Image: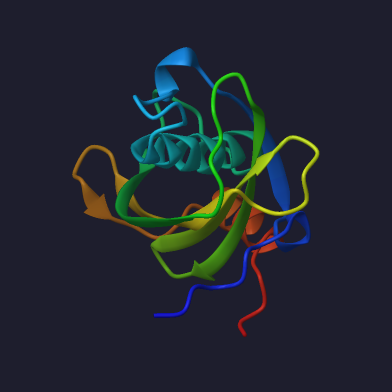
Amino acid sequence: MSRAAIPTRADYGAFYPITTRWEDNDIYGHVNNVVYYAYFDTAANNYLIEEGGLVLPDAPVVGFVVNSGCEYHSPIMYPDKIEAGVRVDRLGRSSVQYGIGIFKQGETSAVAHGHFVHVFVERATNQSVPIPEQARTALERILVAPA
């Protein structure tokens, strides 16, 4: 199985600093693989809050995670300074697939990258709904062209 090319900062449309924590490190002395998914969640939701009009905790429409995946290229550890790059790989009627890259501060190549899928649902019913217009407009701004 071949691995995808390691993404660079140029592949992402928005960046968010993330603070690593002592508890992120595992017994091997680096950030544990499951922590990267929390970084993905933080980056995607920061984008929705800052650019897409998501107002927590009372938003009537929210994104539920239905799929995610990650490839790891080099380890990071506390107290590394990191940033998450965010882009949109696919934009549907009620769902979005983000591409997320994790970078050490000041470095060009990702230490890890992956995807994160939100399905937008009405909070009261847990039923999927179209992506709200303000969020859709924001997501379109970081949508990458299909290959």
